[in-house]
Image (cartoon, rainbow, N blue to C red):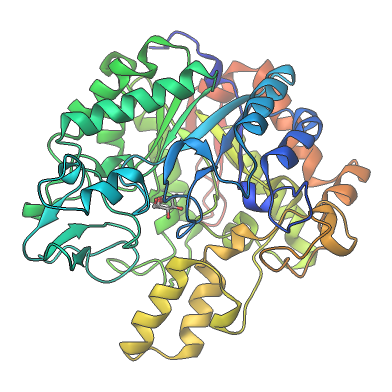
Length: 482
Ligand code: GLC
């Protein structure tokens, strides 16, 4: 079975981490105008959609995944006029903007939570999840998922940081407010939504159920019906809990949920079984190939895959799956690009991947910025881990690796900013930058450009038949696609 062809099935998307892409005003922080100024570059690469990491108003406890006003733009990134300009200019370049939307939780500085905290009988109290006593639920950022609100003596739920209170999706008013807000963005002409940690919205905290709760799929179906369902938009759910069976529930077109989901099975292979990402284990290429092949074959005709090696939460692809030493960096980057882009689904390139940016080692926790890294470090030091082993884990898996500023040139400031960059550059700026990549016709950039162009020409790349090739060598990952 093939589905009715949609624009996003042959598209290649490009993820932008606005804070680190291009600064236009010298404050050291990337912004929306900066992104607009790079649309020519993106058109040259050939991508037709941008996944724009959150730019909404936010106190930035979790770099914008803590939204305090969904219909306003964080001043560090610009304003609504800059956003409207980006939408209009991107359109002229044939590029759609996919908004990253966080509706599992808000910021504790969102007006709803500010109200909710005022008293137990406030109209907004039920917008969030409250309990008289905490239970054993833990936050993804370490520690209890419950925070005491001293004024009322109750605890509120936060599956991420305590500045990210979880919304109560059982409350119809919450759902309506979310739909209204999404329709506001649809009316502005966005190309779709990336729905942050969306597999958590059907949670049942009393039963310690977070991902994949019983109301999850009905909630997504209602979301589809009330917002994007009637439009030709792309939607991608971030679902850490997905497996090939429930991926079909999310992405089979008859079910009217999402276009596709991000599944993460292949990024859990270099950690110890049953432990956390910081507990490193060597990556076995045969297992990686098996997992990705399974997703290829099991979703055929039943759903749609997203394809990615890295994003703003994950290490750089070459450092993780390839070999980032200078002699192998570009080669392994090309291998990874070709391997992924011939697979069925929609590929997502993470900014800088197309020029082969790599991880940046740190030597001390003070060099880390990310909230997740800091919380993990503090907790594990308390639990007896050594500084050395934690720094090794952070070098391999810390989220700052992906978040360092984009390397446009080899000059001071890397063409990113005329000011002091908010996060230190990688130490490879001189060797790895866009200017250099564009000047060399053999560079990784042109491999990506070619792959993106081929996808537009050959439908068998985005949805052909996938067959694993047996090579007799477990370190060769090979498949046939036609
Ligand atoms: C998602 C985002 C991540 C964020 C978290 C909480 O996993 O990708 O960056 O910290 O959700 O919103």
